[in-house]
Length: 69
Image 1 (cartoon, rainbow, N blue to C red):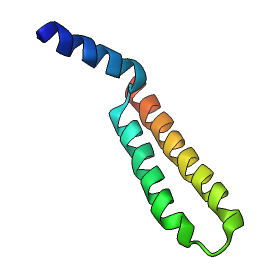
Image 2 (image 1 turned 180 degrees about the vertical axis):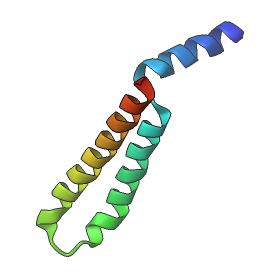
Image 3 (image 1 turned 90 degrees about the horizontal axis):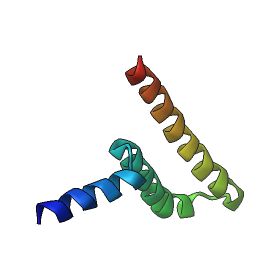
C-alpha cells in the first residue's frame, strides 16, 4: 500500500510542482467563472481572465526566484 501512495505522490508531483500556484489558478478560474459573466462589457472578460493568470504567474516566478537565492 505504501508503494502505491508513493507512486501517486510522484505522479502528482510531475503535474503540480508548486501547490500554491495550482490552487491560485483554480481559485482564479472559479472567480472568473462566477464573477466575469456579471461584467457588463463582454469584450473585457477574456482580457481580465488573461491578466489574472499573468499576475499569478508573475507572482509565482518572483517567489521562486527569491527562494532560489
